[in-house]
Amino acid sequence: MGGDQLQITVAMGLYMLVVIGIGFYYAKRASSNSDNFLIGGRKLGPWVTAMAAEASDMSGWLLMGLPGVAYWCGLSDAIWTAIGLLIGTYLNWLLVARRLRRYSVEAGNAITIPDFFSNRFQEEKKVLMTIASLFILVFFTVYASSCFVTVGKLFASIFGANYHLMMILGALFVIFYTFIGGFLAESASDFMQGVVMFISLVTVLVAGAKLAGGWSAVLANARQIPGFLEFFGIAQPVMAGGLQQLGVDGQPLFGPAGRYGLLTVVSTLSWGLGYFGMPQVLLKFMAINKSEELVISRRIATVWCAISLAAAVGIGLIGRVVYPAAFLTQSGAENIFILLSTNLFFPLLAGFVMAGILAATISSSDSYLLIAASAFSKSIYQGIMKKEASDRAVLVVTRITLLVIAAFAMLIALDENSVIFTIVSFAWAGFGATFGPIMLFSLFWKRVTWAAAIAGMVTGGSMVFLWKLCLKPLGGIFGIYELLPAFLLSCAAIVLVSLMTPEPAPAIQDQFEKVCVAGSKLP
Image 1 (tube, one colour):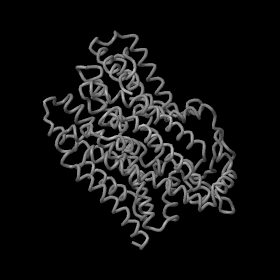
Image 2 (spheres, rainbow, N blue to C red; image 1 turned 90 degrees about the vertical axis):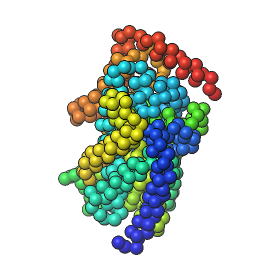
Image 3 (cartoon, rainbow, N blue to C red; image 1 turned 120 degrees about the vertical axis):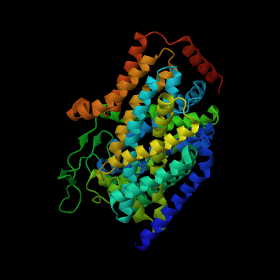
Image 4 (cartoon, one colour; image 1 turned 180 degrees about the vertical axis):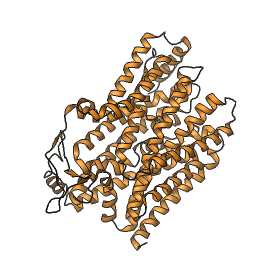
C-alpha cells in the first residue's frame, strides 16, 4: 500500500471507528426492548429527524449515481430528477409528517409501516400487514444491494482491489453496527453522516469548479457537447461494444442531441411521488419526539436536499469537462466523485471527503436492513406466526432476519457492472407506487376502505414489475419511468374499490376524525 492509499485508509478508518462507537454507545438502550430497537422510543429531536431522514433516503446514489448520470448524458436527466426529488421532499414533510406522527400513535402506537396500515384499518386477519411486509422485504433487499454495490465500487476504485471482496467487507461492516445499535445508532450516525455528505458535496463542487477554470469555463466547454446542457435535450454517447468511442484526438464521441420531451420531463419529475411511500423516511416522521417540531425538521431537510442535489449534478458536469474520457461506460461514470476527490485534495483530506460516500452508503443500508427486518419480525412473526412471542424473541428474530436479508442483497450486488442509479430507481418506484398512494389516502380520506388498501398496494407494486419488465422495453409512450403509471393506477384502484365497498366501520371513522381534530389544534 502506497503512502497516499495509507492516508486515505487512515482517514476512512477513523470515520468507521466513530460510527462503530455510536453503535456501541446505543447498544444497551437498543437491546432493552423492540420499541427502542426499531423506532428509538419516539425520542428523536428535530435536527436528528431531518438529517437522518435525508441521509438514509439519499444513499450512495447521491454522491455516485446522480453525478454519474450528469457526467454520462448531461444536465436534463439529472436536473429534472433532482427537481422532482426536491418538490417531493418538501411536500412529504408538509403534508404527511405531522399527521402520520399523530396517527401512528393513535392507531395502536404503531412502530412499523405495516403495523400502521394494519391498525389504521383495524384488520383482524392481518392480510394488509402481510402484503405490506412482503413488499418491504423485496424492495429493501434490492435497495440494500445498491448500497453494497456503492461501497464495493468505492473501495475497489481507491485501492485497486477486487470488487467482490471489497463489497463483502463493506457489507459486513454495515451489518455489524446495525446489528448491535438498532434504530438509535442508525439515527444518530445518520445525523453525522448527513453532515459529512453535505460537506463532501460542497467541497468537491467548489474545488472542481476552480480546477476547471470557473463556472464560465465549465459551461463553455460543456456546450460543445450536443444536448449536454439542455433542459429538453440529452447528450448521446457514441457506443460500440459497450464502450463510448473516442475520436482521433482522444476525446469522447457524441451523436446528435436526443429529444427530452414533455412526457419524459413529467416522468422524471415523478421521482418526487416516491417520497410518500418511502418507509425509511416515514419511520423518521413517526419517531420524532413532538409532532410540532416537524416544522423545524422540514426546513432543515428542504435546505439540505436543495443544496446537496444541486451540488451532485454540478459535480457530474464538472467531471465531464475536466476528465472527458476518464469513463467510457455508464457504470464507470459513477466513479467521477471519487476521481475528483483523489485528484483535488491531498490524500488525508481526500479520505475524509470520500468518507461522504461511505456515510451515504451506511446511512441508507442500515435503514433498509433494519426496516426490512422489522417488517418480518414485528409484523409477520409476532403479528401472525407467533402472537405470544416475547419482546426478547422479537429482537432475536429481527437480528436473524437482518442477516438473511443482507445475504440476499450481497448476492444481488455481485454484479460489479451494476448501475447504482438503475437499481435505486427500480426500488424507489416500488416503494412509491406500493405505499405512496395508500399512505396519502389513509391520512386524508375517511372513506378509504380496507379492501381498497389491499387493491392499491397490490396494483402499485405489481405494476412496477409489469411496466419495468414487459412494457418499458416497447419504447415510445411506454418508455416513461414506471413509478408514474404505477402510482396513478394504484390511486385509481383505491378510489374505485373504496366506492364499490361498504364504508369503514364507525370506530375507524371516529379514529380518523380524532386525528384530524388533534391536528387542527397544532400551529
